[in-house]
Image (tube, rainbow, N blue to C red; front, side, top):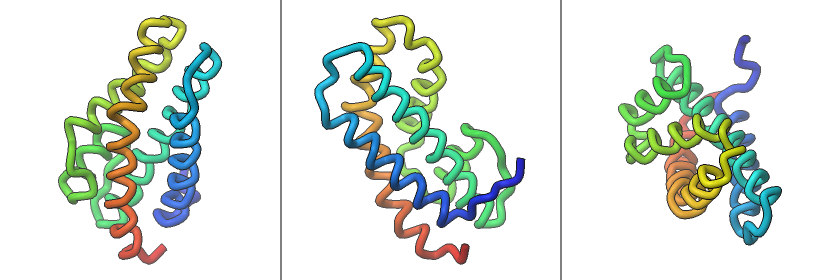
Amino acid sequence: MNNLLGPKSRYAKLSQALLQLKAFAAEPVVSKRDRAGLIKAFEFTYELFWKTFQDFVNAAGVTIAGPKPSLKAAFQLGIIDNENGWLAIADDRNLTSHIYNESLAIDISRAIIDRHLPLMSHTHRVMADYAKTLTS
């Protein structure tokens, strides 16, 4: 499927998704439904992050496709400054299909709030400067 969004448009969508994830994380997780909502918001925020990384990298003239290649290329371009943290985010995203396992869901929701969201927020701020340099 062709990319219908340009890098700046996708970055704007990412900004909206990150705000929603922050709102979910700001509320106490008191039920399985709350946890599932937080994890789902994490999933689509992560998806937009890697697709935006891919857009930024492609705009820099490097052709890549897929989540992990996008993370690694974004690290090489300086868009990401904590590659291991982002690889941990990617690993947890891959585990979210197993949230029927309550213990795993609890661990992932804690990681989202304690580690992943702060790193996502930091990277988003770095990306804001990079987005200004893009033409589309």
